[in-house]
Amino acid sequence: MSPEISIELIIALTAGAALFGVGVYGALSQTNLVMIMMGVELILAGAMVNILAFWRYLHPDVAAGQMFVLIIMTVMAIEMAVGFAIAIARFRAKGSVEMEEAVDLKG
Amino acid sequence: MTAQAFFIGFFGLASVWFGIVVFRTYSMMRSAIALLFSQTALGAMFLSMQAEFLGVLQIMMMATEMSIMAIFMVMFMMDPGGLGEMDMTHQKRLSLIAGFVSFVGAVAVAVFVDWGPVATTFPDAAQQTVDLGLELLDRSMLIFETAGITILTAMIAATAVAIQPVKKETGKK
View: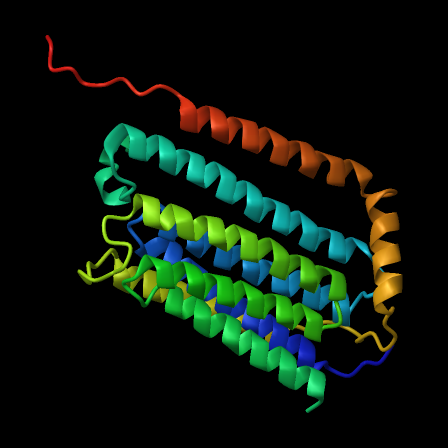
């Protein structure tokens, strides 16, 4: 082990932070359900980069780091499946997936 | 700067740039393709970090996922080509502030936290795959199986939600 700071780790974490920021902007600013899902995908992608970077540069001997990346990929797939199911149900019922028109969902 | 740092930075920048393009274009097809490129650049970034299995998996999974997303885009959008330049955003200022603050906060944590000693030894691609396989079939088996069952449940639930009959409004009182 070396105590030096890894420039590669910092670059990867910065890229992950940028993806997270872009994802937060997308998820909050878009009015269309599918576009909101794209924002959530970018947020999860940012998390995935961070976990992989931590595994690669800090604990490459612990395979659980790779396993967490697989779990995030699973979460991405589930988010897509459930999100599109809600989108189809909404489209069939109301003819649109615009979330500004979904005021009837407000509690 | 090492070649690895250069390639991680290059593909990271490409991934972020295409992520921004997703929300800057009016065309939904371009949005879906930009997200595909963003996720592919992320896969290339994984390959640069010597995580061969996860890099290839990321590219293969996202190519399929984004192709499906593009089909849904065409199905659901009033103007999938973006020819009408319809604005589909709201609370832009709040979203920009939230995105920027989360970016700056995460970068501050990345730069100022002492992450401890950096690993100098690293398993090769074959050893990584062996380690991951043993991890999945040993200590993390319950988590892995739960993830599989959750995907199956999500698929069945998604199909059930999507095919439920919709009551037609007949106009009769």
